Length: 319
Image 1 (cartoon, rainbow, N blue to C red):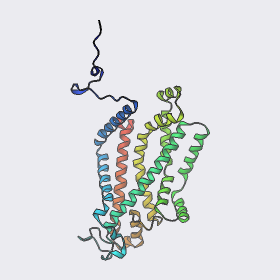
Image 2 (image 1 turned 90 degrees about the vertical axis):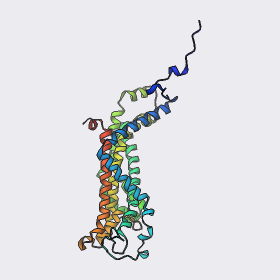
Image 3 (image 1 turned 60 degrees about the vertical axis):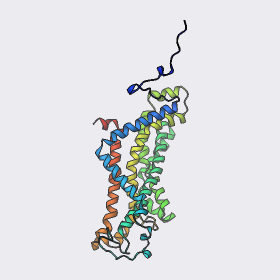
């Protein structure tokens, strides 16, 4: 007797409601499905954190203000030759945040200054994270002289004084936005490299990595397919915290007069306010808006970073 042919749907797994689940037919699709489920699970846990959601809402509002700056106020208000407002006027209906010593609206300066501060923060963080991740994964995976060489460079970068280096580079290459981004990015990657290296040292000794090595996997395959995906959550959580440090660094450089003089940033507004004697003259409206936004951005990034750290760190999540 011939056996009846098996129906194709009989071998498929069944989900809720009796509907067959869609099973990917190649390993890449399976990997993407797992990553999508992990992201959805992380987002569900993140939404339960009041601190993380508060920081996320603040960041969304500030980024929306930065992107929509042309819709909020005209860039012509940044040029002193195009304004005719009163000098050092306190907040009013016409000027909600008052004016500076050139008659420009502090609200306009603050809105447009957010673009440069956030741009420098994000660009410098990208450079810092790329360098820190590459150095950390390589130092954690390889052994011998290469690991010692990378770690000595990392230690040297950690000991390098930031402010004197910024003064020297500004005097050599001039004050420009690119120099600021490169300076912050090239001096803030060492902490990330240390954290990633410690995680990579733990991952490379696990069973599935040893099995892949025994099956003939190359070093590039092991680092890109096994180490890097497992350290990425840690890198992502650390990135959120580094953005806040980068924005503070840009503010410090601009406040010291090392920022780009042709662009308005929050640190540049504070530098002009202190140079104009706003603190001693009682012109608080010139100082308060940029200082408040710097504090809000740094606080929001820190809140999001700690919330992600609690989610991605199993020990903190258990607490």
